[in-house]
Structures are given as structure tokens and as C-alpha cells.
Image (tube, rainbow, N blue to C red):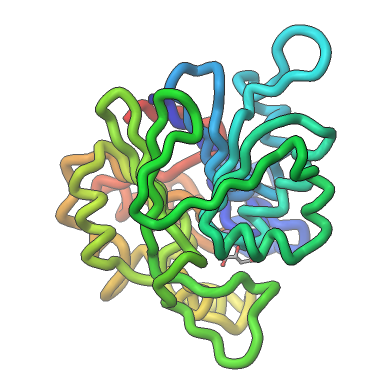
Length: 299
Ligand code: MLT
Ligand code: MN
Ligand code: ZN
């Protein structure tokens, strides 16, 4: 199995179009210590020819341009992208479906809840259901979106997408709205959970059986958006547990130091994106890698 990080950034990417925070400013200025990053997506393949997208990033077109493996082969219409699966319906994870119009067959996978949300928004009908079948999968039931690639979805705590928030928002709902994915091929397993409000027992069980983990690295500190004057929400209010601090991912997932652990979906406010920063050093000392666009992982 091969996994390619198409987008390692969270919503907004790095730099974000309207942001001059410390990390974005360095990226705008071309400082080599900050790599530009597109928004959240992973591609996986068992044979290097057919690929499954784990999330369809709003930056998908740019990601295809940067990734030869995903470009058309031969003449006429073709794409190595044979399937796409959505882990939730956040804009960064789902809006890239609109880049997959032009009547190219592939299969769209997700929970019934995710497909219902996409189905209720008519703009996504531009990806014609006659060429792109939508296949609902149940939590905990293995399925094979591509030959040789076995997947299973499981619930991770999360919230409704920002664009559907109303009233009081529950930030750690367990259900079909936010899922993690186990991908298995050739006896190797990876777990992908780009959004997660807290670590559950079920998630720990899944991680314990895997060879590689791609995990939510949105914010380093829960209050970093507020402390930097970038917004009024904590990470937890956004449905993301922080990397550091009590109940953060370094602490909660410290038992899995023997496996490859990679932070992904990293917000531009997160100082781990500055190479040489104390925060980057802390994450690395704890045995974690920091995903970057173009990173290749063989679990
Ligand atoms: C998130 O990960 O919290 C969302 O992508 C936020 C957003 O929609 O901008
Ligand atoms: Mn996001
Ligand atoms: Zn920024």
C-alpha cells in the first residue's frame, strides 16, 4: 500500500488567503522554514495505478497538478482517481467534488449521513449520479472500494460542518457525521482520522492494530486562535483536540510510539509548521512526524 499526502493543511491551507499570522506571513514571504500546504486529503493505492481519495479537498485541482500519479494516462479522457471517500462534509474535505465533474466515472463513498448532506445540496449534482454512483457504507462493515484495498469506517467524535451549524453545537457527537478510516492492503494497515474531538477506546483499538496513523493536528494549543487574535474559537469548539496540553494528542496517544504517527490537517496558526520551532521539536521528540504535501508513506 502506498499513501500520498495531497493536502496536509487544515481549512484555509498555508498561507491562508486572508491571513498574515506568524506562519502565514513566513509562507507569504517565501521563508524556507514554512512549507506552503494545501487543504486536507490523502490518496491511497494498492497497485500504484488506481487511487482512492480520502476526502476531496477544495484544493484538489492544484493537488492533481502537483501529483503525476493522479494525472491522466494516454490519450482521451482518463483518470487514475477511481474512487473518493468523504470522512465528513466540511468544505475542505468535500468541496473538491466540484473539481471532479466533467463526466469521469468514479465511485463516491461515505456514510449515509454524509451522502444525505451532499445529496441535499444540489450543487453537487453537477457530479452526475449516472456516471458517479454514490455508495453508502455502514460503520464497522468492511468494504473494498478498489481491488486489493479494504476499508472500514468508524465513528470519531466530531461536529456538524461549519456551514450547517445552528443553535447550540455539540462538538463531540459520535455517529455517521465524522468518521475515521482503517485502510488495509497486503496485510498492512493505516488509520486516517483528520478530525477528532477526543480519543475514544474504539479509536485506540483501531490504532493498536495499525502500522501507520494519520491524525488530526489542527492546533498545537487549544486557545491558539484566540491568543493570536485570529478568531474567537478554541480548537475543541471546532471539534478538534489540540496536539499539546492535558488531553492533547501527544499525551493521549503516547502509548503508540512504536508505530509511524503523522500529524495531518494542520491549521496555519499551528507553530509546528515552522521548521526549527520549539513546538516542532516537541512533537518530533515525542516521535511524531508532521505531514507535508507530497509526502509518501508506505505503512
Ligand atoms: C474544520 O476542520 O474544523 C473545518 O474544516 C472548518 C471549516 O470548515 O473551515
Ligand atoms: Mn477542516
Ligand atoms: Zn495564518
